[in-house]
Image (cartoon, rainbow, N blue to C red; front, side, top):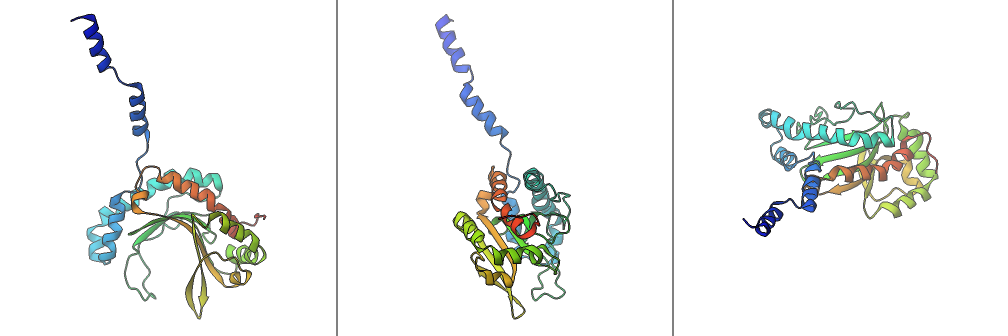
Length: 253
């Protein structure tokens, strides 16, 4: 074999450094916690919301819903704790996860299961605001939410007063985030919860405000791609000021 011919063969067999770095980078990317199986489970639950179906799919529920959400919690917890070191990260239902079982004792809808699940971060006690990610049959959302509780709840103690006194602050957040985030709020009208689209910027709206949600919506495809956790972490940073506004005694304009 001639020297020239052998050199050509060795050159052809030698790995391309650029391609190797690209392959290594691809292998290093974490796979998405949520998968199409997660979304499919909720789609099927919508059509089969009864106990026999759930009993038959209990192990599947643990594998494609519970475990992926726990993985998502592990990945998001460091980002959440950087925003607020008092956030609970125990991984327990009620602390970080919603319940899939519905309390149907006094509900009009007697479906035994919720066709969605939430992962959330909040301080101990659970009455203040939350940073959350929600998974359902048709979408994945993340953002901020708060619901009014008793007279000692943060929304009643801090949020309503600040909402009435700081409409300019809310208007600034609206201008900053309205293109990327959806906002809506709830009031009680004649004993019924009523949804209002938009930002509660008018002081009189805060007198009756019972809940406020600011969220970003993802398609199921986007939520099952690598990098979804980074998008959620960024969203948490964007909406955290709403948590402070409604829940923290230390908030300042």
